Image (cartoon, rainbow over all chains, first blue to last red; front, top):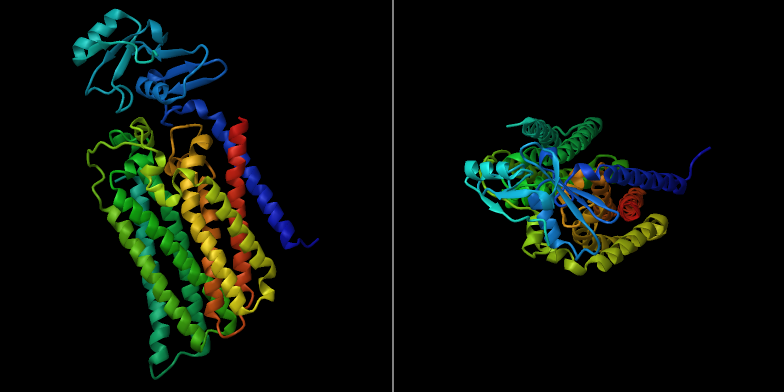
Length: 141
Length: 333
């Protein structure tokens, strides 16, 4: 059966809409593989997780998570940051971690200079080795 | 030097050879027209068809060079301090990148325009005035193509290893700049361009659909008037749409509210390159249609201009629909 131009156009538009929907679903499914602030690829050893009421985000570094926290609209309700211990790459709650700022010595990404440790002893060793300084939790309000 | 750069050099070399062959074919027709032994009708038509094929292949090769440029920028992201995406790397040489994108768009539009004119005047037979117009158009298109080759050479030979600190849209958000300001988008509608974008899109689609459906009933003068109105609507739409994609679409589609970056939109999504291509074809066809009609003057304009207006409007509608579906699915997710 011969097709009219209008029918061809409708088929093309339908195919375009379907392709766009599939593309967006694919993008949404890969959301946690990229930093929720700047979209960079995440190295698991430096990842920071944020858990809100019903939402979960992942950032590539402490710096990106801190920037996101500064820029976002005020957050109501409980929230929880989990950083990675630089000595073991194990997750540790941000409020229990010790942070060392090492200017000139990036960690994970070129713009991140803050490192997290589970043990106080590891934080002190990092501070001495990289000439950094102990700093307060950059992810607190 | 990496794979993307080798590929870019390869495409540049192939394009240079194609343009040289094209200039040779055009010169042989042009010189024979003025010489004492003019080419036979068939031989002249053969060479013009050869030129048509060469322009078609050259346009495809130059189109391929665009994603290769994005691939090259992406390959340097990890090596440039502060860069988070290809846009960050592009900020090492913003003037070279602006020139590369603008010249690619102009060269592809000019080559496409010549193909449209060829389709339009071909039924007149490739003799006399038709051949002269095709040759003049080819010279103009080659001028744009050479400008693009020069711009490509400029970024290919730039020292990309410069250890310069760059920043991206997200860093600019930190210091309170709007993403619109980062991309000189004041001319693209600024922060309030959404309504203007939708209005320009609606006008472009309505005028284009009207031309495609009713254009055949119009005389050449009326068709040209309506085509120019359509082209004006599309000319307003292009900067507004680019600003809107950057400001309103990139963040929600990528799921990154502070990431207003057209580079990321194209590089990260599987289909935004296609969306931009469809949009570009839709926009360029609005200019090709009146030029294809003019090229046949004073003969009846044939069906090519209406077909171009119809195909361009369909491409533009498909691009707009795809963006709308992306936003709907992103909002639903």
